[in-house]
Each structure stands twice: as C-alpha cells, then as structure tokens.
Length: 424
Image 1 (tube, rainbow, N blue to C red):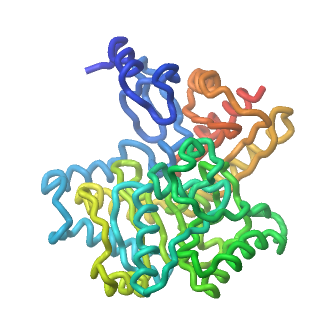
Image 2 (cartoon, rainbow, N blue to C red; image 1 turned 30 degrees about the vertical axis):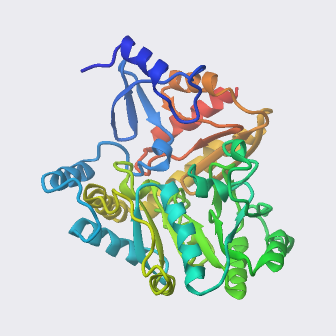
C-alpha cells in the first residue's frame, strides 16, 4: 500500500510530530522504506541519512543480522511480563552490558526509553539515601544539559532550555553548575571546575547525586568539554559522598570514539544510563546500570526492593535485537569505523569555519557540528537538504551530523557537501 495525498493531509491535520506545531506544522517527508544509510521517500527519491534516526541506527537500516534476530524472537514470543518471569534474551543482554560497561557497574535495570532510564537513575539515588537514613533529595546538574522530556528528566535539564522553560514552577527545583568551558582539545583550565566545586561545598549534605552527560552535551548545544572536568567531578563526588550518574544515552556504544564517553576520563559512575543505539534503532529500550553497593543498599532499605517496574521491562523482542546489535558492534570493528568518520568530518567540515555565517565547527568521534551565528530556518533548510538528497535535521543554531557507523566515504561527503552548499 502506497502513501497518497490524503494520507499526508490526514497526518498534517491530526498527527503531532516532535517539537512541531499543530496549527503551523513543519513539512513532513513520507518515507516508505530504508536500507543501509538511505531513506526512500514516497516519490522514489533516496536520502543519505546523517542523523542515524536521532542517533540510534548505528548499523544503518534493514540490516540482515538484526532482521533475522527479530524474526527468530518473534517466532518464540514478542513480549512477556518481567515480574516473576525471566528469559534468555534479557539474561544474554545483561551479561553483555555488565561485561562492556565500566567496573564496578553490574546490576542492570531494563527500561523503556532514555527518559525513563534517567527517571530510574534519579529514583535509585533517592532510594539509596533513604535506605541509608540520610535526607539527601536534591540533584546537581550542568547548564546546557539535556536528559529527556519526562518530568524528572526535565527537572535536571538546563532550566533555561527552550524545551523546558515553559514548565517553570511545575518542576522540582535543583542545583545547576555553569557548563564546563574548556573544550575537549584545549589545555585544561583549573578555574573551570570552580563553579561546580562551590555548589557542592555549599550543598553537599543535600545532594543525592550529580547527573551529567559525559564529555558531550547533546541536545542542549552539542558541546564537547575537557575530560579533566569529568575526572574532577568524579573525585569531588567521591570525597563528598555524592552519587554520580552518567547519562550516556546519546554517547554510549562508540559515538564519541570510546565505547562509553566516561572512558575519555577513565572514570566509572555510580549509575550509567544507556539507550538510543542499544538496539540499533530497531526497538525502544534502555538500561540503568549501577553498582552492587547501590543496588543492595536500596534492596535492604524500608521498601525491600527498588520501586519501579515498567510494563514492557525486559521486552524479549527488544532484548534479542539488542544482543545481535551489540555483537555486530564488535564484529564491525566500530573503533575503526568511528575513527574514519571522525577524520573525514574534520577534513571536510573544518574549512567551513571560514564562512561568514559560521560561529564554530567541532568534531568528536562520529559527531560533526556546524554552529551558525543565527538560528537556522528549519523548514527552509530541511527542504534544501532534501533537494540535495540528504537527511539532516538542524535545530537552533546547530547543523550537525551523527551518521550510521557503516556510512561510506562518498555518502558522508554528500552530507558535508550539502551543509557547505546550504551555508553558501
């Protein structure tokens, strides 16, 4: 069945799309299929995808190995409740996650989405201190941070962020340190940690946990900061008896050139949040992984358990695909794939710094960012990108690329050339 004009009209009048007005909706382009790194539109045009469908399809679309994993699991069971029941797909996935995440993370809570993983991590921190008989109920986060769109996640995201400022007065107030200013490749500036340290010194007895995006602040500005900042945060949290939550939903599974961004600073958090690339973009799934000490303290508290349990927790279909996806990550030599993408992005995007409309260009791993001096017109720029045969979704002043790891050199050049043309 093909999509027609009446379908598009219905979509426009009745279906809400992300961050889009119902009264003045942005144009939506109908996709009928996808394969490799290409999206196929209803009119037959093919677009090279530079977004990995919001950073999730790390191995591209319609991958034979992932398709087979889905079909095999579908033939057995697509879902079963996780309360009082277990199954091999969840066990195998958690085995892999415990093996590849930084030690001593070893207790895995499977959740529905990235935002829910953040909610789970915040609840873990609160229950941990409750179980220890200490009233520590505030969180410390970073400005320019973004952790999701559910209420707990919004409360620890930048309070001035345009996506969340509408909810002022409805969110639990927390503490926010100035965003780190020393860039990833710059010489470390010791003064950069002082705003964070001052907040901790003044509020340590009240802070349950620090939550941050390690090394890369994503939707809050696509900013890359110095690994030493993360090392200092880890040390301060340890000294002050504050839990550290690393939101690796966007950065996990190789995107920054390390399997997890925490590895740039050689640190381990007390809780890590994973999502996006975990199933290669096939299913929604996330995980919050913590230490034995945190898990057992919660479990020995008043409640006797961790008080959270999503309906689709440990979904067998999602877990089976995730296992295949993470096996594929190793087989594909992701380190070399990401290194190749990084080298090409640096070569082809860095010259764009010379353009009058460009404020900055930055590249880390398989992430390339062109920051413009004024916000882009999303409707117009999106249309131009489609005309160039690419799919790039800008926001604010940011035109960025997070392509699938399997992208070929000529396909990546189509993306970078399209950005250069748009800026011209």
